Image (cartoon, rainbow, N blue to C red; front, side, top):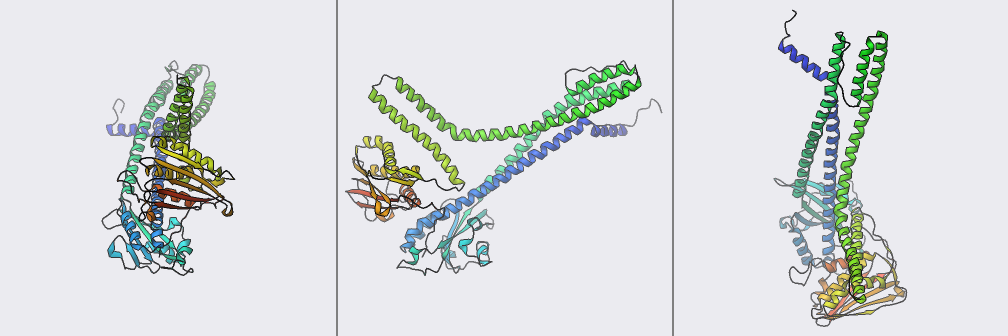
Length: 556
């Protein structure tokens, strides 16, 4: 009946239907869909990549710890000093995050464990730790290191990762007189290291929460201004256009739409106004213009979608660029800042009123600092290369030049400590293929130890010798310090072993030296007498073989 308003229920249903049919609402829903998909995918990939990185880090850490344990007990087990080896493993097993360490022989019998209740038990060959090798009769040494781990959850406790590491029978073990094994026996036993994943799981869970929270906040922060933009730039102009069409449908051809701006919808409104004026002239012209207008709307809508897609891509690339810039800033800016100050000091020294000799000395010291800063940057680069598992870079260098550079770093320390430096170099062919930074690190460590051994001053003598018959170079570092006690001498290259006061030494210096010499396929030994000083002898081949990534250790 005319004049009677429709029921409220029907009005609400009509408004809801119009809302879902609205172009603005559909554009907004499409925006929501795109943002949720892309941000959700980004969040998923971020969580996935983080979990993969944490897994690789844990695997690398447990592999490294397992190799450290094997290297730490290698010398003791070769000399059949089982108690010393077991004490090392107990000490490492008590470190935070370490669940347990055990060794079982090729029969599966546990010969050592930080849990004494396991000693003498036979492990289950069908368990996760053994199934990879025993299920298909595949030799343990052929199983990749990444496949030797397993993850399990302890009853009522956190997850635990375990790694098995074969203990191979090397020639030095099979030929040892005290506990020789037949050379045909390839594997003597297995080292099983287990570490807690509680901290890793906590980090993963916290990272997932943060990423999901940031993703939700990002969606809200992006969609809120998007909704306002669509409402003001699309919905309102379209509503004015709709109102104008209704007026024209009622026959009001004098009605004009109030518009401003030069965007696509404004152009549409201008066109609509011109169209209403032309309606008075001819219906045919109006029909033709409507078709042209429809085509323009489609073209402009396509352009808008392309621009919108481009905007999304730009935002993604900007986020990635910001992340990359932050990482580069954190790594490079501290070193760059120090380097800048060194340059500034050089300029100030040159402009100062100091004597030429003083300037020359200070500029020489600043040059050393600058070179060491650059070397630090190179070390960061080398650490990244090493983390990706690439091979060490060996080049041809003059060993005398490397020794001179190392001595220059400690020249000031020697003067302060009242230490006289003597050099006795071989000036024949002293070139050698090596990693220069590692050789410098080795020499600096030995020279610092020599300095520490002479608290009242003394003499340090550095000698290089050419050994043509062995195609090698020998470096000798001698001091007139307190010397090394005879009972301590066999242990100086062991990790964490130190005779210094607590807090003044980590016990890793000579272990690092030994590792560098080993990577260069060289040898190192020391001769010392208490009260008369010590002499370290390092023999390095001129052309070492390519350094290996694995180290085979021995257990008898």
